Length: 294
Image (cartoon, rainbow, N blue to C red):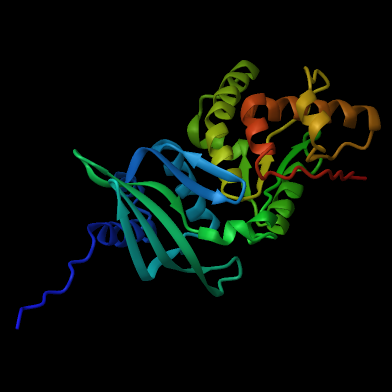
């Protein structure tokens, strides 16, 4: 009678388990070692990010979206290997806290693709936690259309108050220019030219963060002043292809129009035409709303 030996587990299964642990611990530097340089991560049914750098930004935004409470584990998994490639069929289980602090659980029939590298071993090249659910419209992901809100108005007109209200109502991330500038440049902003220089640098720094947040389906509210009549040029792409998501707190129609144009130009500076197009043709919804302070 011949001896029988159990089939050893495929090494990819251990990689998936360790990657899940890194996601749950928000250890994104370790997480990236499981991905190939040209890997793709599916975020929504219409948005996929590619490359390790973009994947790292996406996971940071995903962690915020799940209130830093996301725990990922796997149920049954099956590996099909061929030609140096391994297809993983997995029952991915998510546990997280919603905005009300309630525990939520979700199970996804995920598909992952790994490629064998002679130097680094098995590396993930496609991370699709939604699996074939992407083929069944209406997909739950189709309604994840994040909104970007920009505000403009005079000093003390209620912009910050409105921004806080919007962030609460939309469960959005609030980016406040004053707070960022005070933290990044303490005691360095003493003149108007100091402000212009530092504010321009801040907008450049905020751009990749905003793209990552919107790409992960997270609403964003910008509390960045737009309080000058010298509005510069607006963004024709913004106006022609999507409705504006700009709230103005000015009571005078002409001034309100000028400030909306300034805020449009400001948003274009933060998200120039090419990245804006990438977001808008993906899953970003730009909705129009105005509010007057009487």
